[in-house]
Image 1 (cartoon, rainbow, N blue to C red):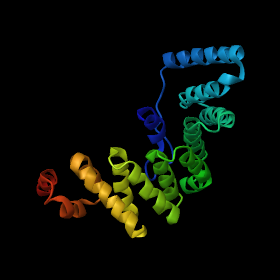
Image 2 (image 1 turned 90 degrees about the horizontal axis):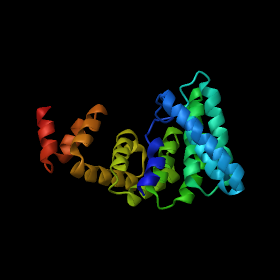
Image 3 (image 1 turned 180 degrees about the vertical axis):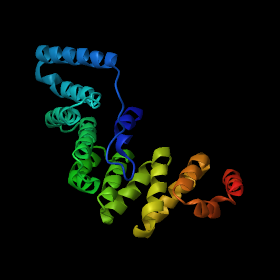
Image 4 (image 1 turned 90 degrees about the vertical axis):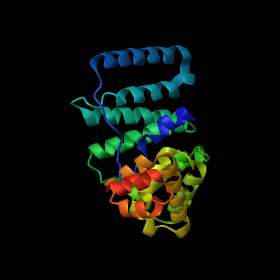
Length: 242
């Protein structure tokens, strides 16, 4: 489950249109190039069986080169590799998640509005949910994409409740639930709002400082202090400090 989370949770955050970028040292670039050459040799020796795995590795390696001058060109090459891997192994959710990450990066580099990108990629998010129906982060990614696309409908509410039901104690999902509650609570169905409040209640039990820090940045201190000061010494102390 931890390995799946690493691949899946990169994209989830309301309002995000991509994934974090970082420079890669020259030594790591050389190492990645060697590994890609070895993978290519394995493909020649082993045949189609390793094709999907190779293309997955190629796409992952090329993501590390996004600080090059031809940033968009490298991203497009990486996306093409991920798409080829996905066609070879359509039932592999890790490949699908990588393809989505790269699609978001390419769209951002092309200055495509996040709303349009998210709406265009919704079918892919739904496919990943179908591949991992019990994986809450797949539903979290779909919910986040729906919200970025400005689509608050029955599907959004249903997937939101499923996300919380499948991962009630996941810290990242609790924080996502808090953000959704603050930004979209009034537009959601009552049952969805109750589910979000339940996630926030659990978050306050186990990560009160994170909840309050996040709430302060989002202008939610009066609401949080009113709801939790009587039940949580930590929250009460934070609220009393002003």
